[in-house]
Image (cartoon, rainbow, N blue to C red; front, side, top):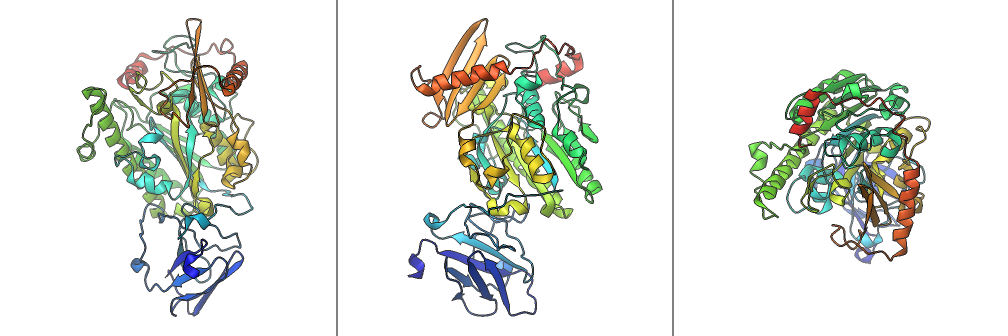
Length: 535
C-alpha cells in the first residue's frame, strides 16, 4: 500500500507566486511531479511515490515551520530542483522558489529508513560567492544543543546546524588562538608556520618567554589568495593577539582591530559588519568576524545570565564560571542570527557562503585545568564547523568524518575561486561534501599542537604526547568508547604504535624556529590586555 512503502515522501506545496498557468511540472530525478495547484489532493508520481497536498497560502502550511536567518526550514527536507538530480532526502534543505512556476516545497522523510543521502554527481561550485567567516573564540562544540548539550545555549545555531553542512568531528590545530587561526588561514599545521604556542606566559616552550607572534613572510594566507582574485577583504577582530603588527592583517583591505579591556562585545562587531555589508553589497567580498564574548572574562547581559543559573559542579566557582560561559554562548547565538539577518536585508543571502566555526574550546576542570592553551583534550580542540549557502542546500546534512580547521582554506578556495589553493596540510572538503572519496577522509590522521605537546587522532583513536623537562608522556584514548577521555589506555593495542609513528613523522616536518629570530618582545600594553583575558 501507498502508506506502507519505506520510500514514501510527503510533500506540501506552497504557491509562492502562482502564474496564470494551472499546472506546474518539474522533473524530479526519474519521476515527474505534476501538481494541480488548484485541484484536489492526489498522487502524481511513480517512484518514489509522492503525496501532493493543496496549500492556499504559505502562512498556512500544516508543517512545523521554523523561520531563521536565511529562510531556512528545519527538519528533513529537500527543495524542488531546477535541474535533474537523483531524488534524495537529506538532513535539511533550504526551501527556495524554483524557476518557472515559482513553487516552493518542503519534502519530509516519512520513513527515514527509505531515505538516502546520495548527492548529485557534480561537485558543488559557488564561484564568486561572498564569504562571511563567523569565528567564535573559545567555543567548544559539546556546549551546543546540536551536539547534545542539555541547556538551551544555542537555539538559532541548532536550527542552522539542521540547515547546513555541519561537520560533527572537527579538530582544532591548537588549543590557543594564534596557532589555530594561523593554521586556518594558511592550511598548514602550527609546526609549519612556527607559532606553536603564544603567549609564552604559561608555555611549555617557546622561542623566547613572553614573545609576540609573527606570521612568516613566506606563508600564503587565504585573505591574500582571495584578494588576488578580485575579492574585497575586511576583518573585525577583537582578540589582542591578532594584531596588524604581527602580520594577521595581510591580505585584508580593511582590518578593524578593536582595542579594549575586556574585549569589545558582539554588538560592536555587528555594527561594523553592517557598515561593510552595505558598502560592498555590489561586489564580492570576504568578511571575517572574530567574537570574544565566550572568552574569559565573562560579562553576560542580565537577560542571558538569568536563563543560566549555576548548577552543581566540582566547585561553586567553576559552576558560576560555566554558567557565565553558557550565557555568553546564548548571546553569540543572537549575534550570529543578526549577521545572517543583515545579509538577508542587504539582498546578499542567496550569494553568500557562511562559514561558522571556533578556534578552540575551553576547559572547566575536566582534566584539572581552567581555560585553554594548556592541554589538548577534547574539550579544548573539538570545535564546530558549518557551511551554509543556498547552492549547497541539496547536500545539507551532518558529516561525521573527522576533519581539521586546516581544511578550511583549500575548501573555500575550491568552492568560490578558480584554481587550487597553495600546497598545504589541509585537504579540500568539496569531494566529501559531494559524498566522494569518503574513505580517504575517514582514514586521515589529524594533529593538534601546543608547544611541545602534540596529539594525533585517527578513526576515533587519540594519542597525546607531552614533553616536559626532557620527559615524554603518552596518553591514549578510544574516543568512541571514552569521548570525555577519562580512562587512558595502557600500551597494547596496535593503533597506539601507529599513532606514535605518526607523531614522530609529524615532528620531523617541524619548521626550524632557530631560523626565525625575528620574534619580538611582548609590548607591555599588550601583555596587560592578554593577562586580563586570563593568560
